[in-house]
View 1 (spheres, one colour):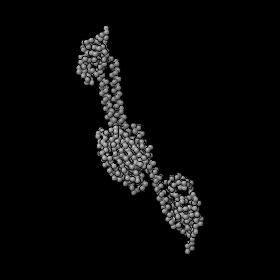
View 2 (cartoon, rainbow, N blue to C red):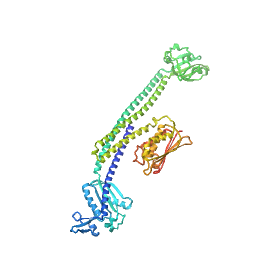
View 3 (cartoon, helix red, strand yellow):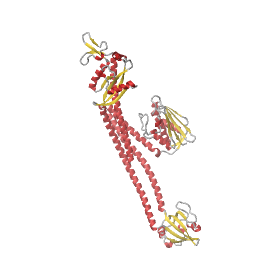
Length: 604
């Protein structure tokens, strides 16, 4: 039970860690999206101003003539009415607008350069490092979370490319059209995003805690029942051992049955234990032929007994003999199964009689029967445990459905009170519950491959593929997949239901892991091998699998490559287990981006 609790805790903990990481990624993505919105607004404004060559505005205290544009003709003009005007170029306009916007909305933006015309536009440490990357690489956009005295901000900077309109002010710096002359940056505070993230993380922690507790209760109930069964079985085993020990002690104390016979097989001696065991008095035994004490015509195992008994060869040939399973008659009880050891008595060089030592083997036979019954009980108990595991896993689905249902209810009832982020967080929680539900169902399928399989029978593999494609018809239509099936696939011996599941998993994977730039093409074929086994393959033109992952993909919970594709990491483990149950092997041939071919063999 400890291992089950550890496994369950690892499973739920892993899910929680995955969801926490996903929430954090979502938070950064939302902040990045907002930064890009502000950035695009600034770019649109700058381009508008650039196309118009700047604007003339009245000179005031806040907007004095820019000394950095003194080289521009007509920087300052006077209207016919005598109003002095000064030229604001795009950088001047954008800087002033960004200052006002930052004061009201806390989102800061600015134009900066390693060679600024206006020293106020000089780059800070972070901006300088990004501008160096722009100058020395093909990178044109950088975003990063930066911590500072005023909190954490998501900073986004994109390279500013020189356009024709820029040369009006910056031609004197030697720039040409297409040169990188600086960057436009946006800084978005993360406090609000992280407040929403904290709420979502608390919700994830609570929901996973509930799921973990439900699982612990289920495992506890299962462990208690299993422990009770084990205790009962151990008690039965102790009882068998106590009975065996007690009987052995009694036999050792009183001795085994010892009978002496003469040359005619007549009883001439019987130990006290013989009278106790057989019920005959010493007087009744004396002179009786020993073979008259043996039940005629049978042994305990049902083998016919010859006309002579165990003492005859000893008397005739002077050879010791051991006979097991003969039935000795008792006076007032059914015949007794015994083991008889006979030894000759030699006098004067000839056999004059024999000593027969026998002991009761009825307890041993009963013990064998009881052990057989106990083994049957243990086998039934194992099947009961498997059924119980299925029931527990089935019961775990209900709390998961409740989580999904209540999250849906919250979404419907409070939809008008939730913003987009809140609705997204609820969707993430519902998706997590559904993923765990699918994972539990897949685990049950994985555990029942061996225990709930059907007997092998001839299987028409063409019909198996047809059933598989019928089950996946909706996915095939949605993806526009083209599937080519080899006519008259060789038949095989196997469990038809499991073979349909095997094919369905392989074709389903080919549909899920398709390449985004082309429709799926899947080929299904088979052949009869020289060793009499049947080999089949499923080939696709999907995203492929890197060589270093060819073995890992068949391990349970292993997902490599396109992790954005929905799945539990159990499907190929089930496939491998089904193939191995049929005495075969499964392999994959693939290169990244070149599709994959899965091959497996089945008995004929």
